[in-house]
Amino acid sequence: MSTPNITLITSRDNSLLKELRRLKHDSTGYRKQGQVWLEGDHLCKAAILRGISPTMAVFSESFMPLASEYIAYSAIKNIAIVDKLWAEISSLESPAKMGFVIDLPQPTSILPGVPTVILDRVQDAGNVGSILRSAAAFGFKQIIALKGTAALWSPKVLRAGMGAHFTLQLVENVTLEDLKILAIPLVVTSSHQGEFLQNLKLPSPCAWVMGNEGQGVTSTLLEQAQVKVRIGQPGGEESLNVAAAAAICLHASSVQLG
Image (cartoon, rainbow, N blue to C red; front, side, top):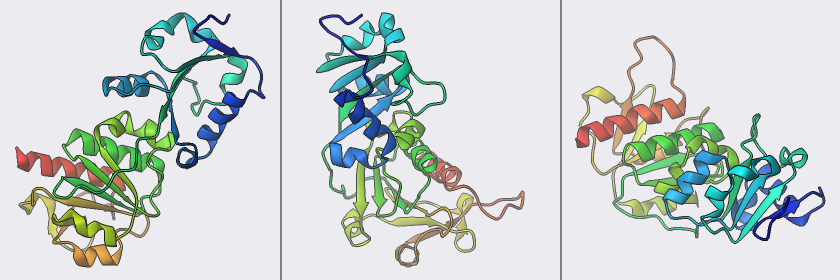
């Protein structure tokens, strides 16, 4: 069922299929291969809206009658994979039947003075993606991932981010020393110190620091923070999930900015 514009893959041993499997299974594989796997209609359309041209458009064989919409965006390669092999590259329980391979964006440097979220060893990919989504929604333009944070372009983070990656400045593998260039106040959340969020006038621009799920924000950043914030929890819970805390804090910043 291949056409002059589409190559049909029928063999499990095909080299392109092997590359796609590596991108699916290795959460940091994009760093070695220089490419990122976007699975599903939503992510692919988010990339297109941001002017990203895929290196490769990949479809299950049964999806081909609907593929013309995506082929129109001029991927360098258009690949169809027989349905029985599609699960080998899908990360979803209900496979999305199509995806893009895009080139990994070039590494970026920290931009000073930009509203920022710092991820301090946040390890759960779902949390990281959710925080990226909140950052994009509430006007924070830059994400800085300290060493020990989940890989920002991994398939799970991409799915949870729902397209936020394409609106943000993303900087990975950052050290505490590197943060000096930011030149804006650091704001940290703590369950036992600081003023309640609703009582604070928050600095703008600022950098919110979101800490590790178990250990919280590292002591060095706590000491360096200009503002420490507590989120009131009248229901009596000890702490909030880091992604939920980030959404509350970033929304509070955006509301104060008007």
